[in-house]
Amino acid sequence: MAAGNKSGTITRRGFLQRSQAMMAVLGAGSLVGSTEALAAPTKTTGTDYYSKLGVKTLINAAGTYTFLTAAVMPPQVRDAVYEAAKHPVYLKDLQVKAGEYLAKKLRCEGAVVTCGASSALTLAAAACVTAANNCKPEDIPQNIGSKNEVIVQHGHRYGYDHALELCGLKFVEVVTMEDYRKAFNEKTVMTNFFNAAEHGEIGHKDWLAIAHEHNVPCCIDAAADMPPIENLWKYTEMGFDLVCFSGGKGIRGPQNAGLLLGKKHYTDLAHANNNPVDGVARGMKVAKEQIVGMVAAIDWLLEQSNESMTKEFTRRAEAIGNIVKDVPTMQVTYFTPPAANQVPHVIMTFDPAALGITAKEAQQKLRELDMPIELNPATGSTRSSGGVPPHPNALVATTWMLNPGEDEIIGKQIKAILTKKKA
Ligand SMILES: *Cc1c(COP(=O)(O)O)cnc(C)c1O
Figure 1 (spheres, rainbow, N blue to C red):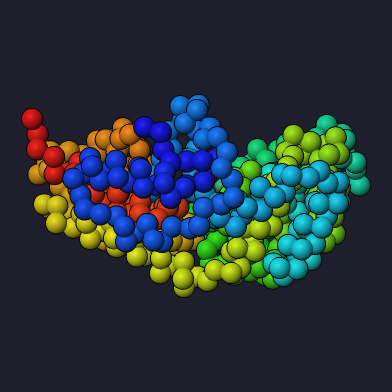
Figure 2: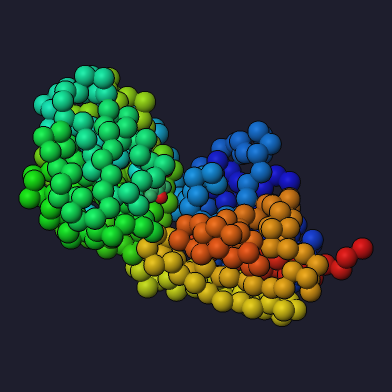
């Protein structure tokens, strides 16, 4: 089914078409109430390339996962991207002015719009390598000089280590405070802290204090850790020299944008290593549309409040919960993770033997719909995902990336799948 998507925008007509098709499937009542909450259509009326390419749009009840293209941009961000596409500018001028604007808004000394949080880590490393070795962008990673060590906690090693390795860095792992104190030497360039790590015994304050005793800069990866909104200045105010955020997760900017925030000495060095310079970030270009989209997303976000976002995400979670709660054996609970993805999730636990279907099977059936519904990967799983503990016998829905009306569709589809009579 071609979804109602026009160049990434959900039009009212498209939405009604798809929700009516869905209601026909479900034999359910009117959705008029929820369509009133629809955002005004944006100015663009371009070709629907998703439908032209035969790419299905989906309902994202999983969260800001990269493989699901993470967030959808709010209308005012999409409009800013559309306006930015009309005219060429001097790229450096835009990078610098966007950085200055964001630094002021986000209460830090300096800012760089990067090509995502992963690229923010690379530019942070490039800045620290440059500061320690006094090298040039073209020296990274092969000729940086003798200083090439980054200190991390063993429990903070992760897939994004690659982003630092790109700058020629080697990892020095520590577990205890004593290890940490001993790890500093003349080769130390920086430290990295994974904010949402589930392991690691050294806290933020001790981590910073000891590094700063040695005059070593500290970077923190807080990519997915907004909300709450104040986290955007919490870590720079705590004293971290460099702070990385994804632009396309909770901030709801373009997926290939991110933020590097911090002390001006280091963010200036990050700018110096950024494209169009032929260095490590040459292949991490952020186009003018995405730079502007990132700035517009911060403007949009700062007009929101933690309370209003929580209220709306909770309303959606409860809308789903209320539709499925009468399914036999169903127990509906709600959960908000403590660090990353700190938003309400609805956990729908049931007895697979009584209903004749497992959580994983139900998840797969939702994926096979004309309008696929993607649930949180903790669904039917023995592994946690995005801060949600494993739920082998539950469906887990995350509500912050839903478009208006999709909460109701999710609830009805889940109920239909779980109560379908076996042939
Ligand atoms: C998502 C994520 C990243 C990568 O973010 P991008 O913006 O996709 O580059 C890095 N670190 C953590 C902890 C993340 O959750």
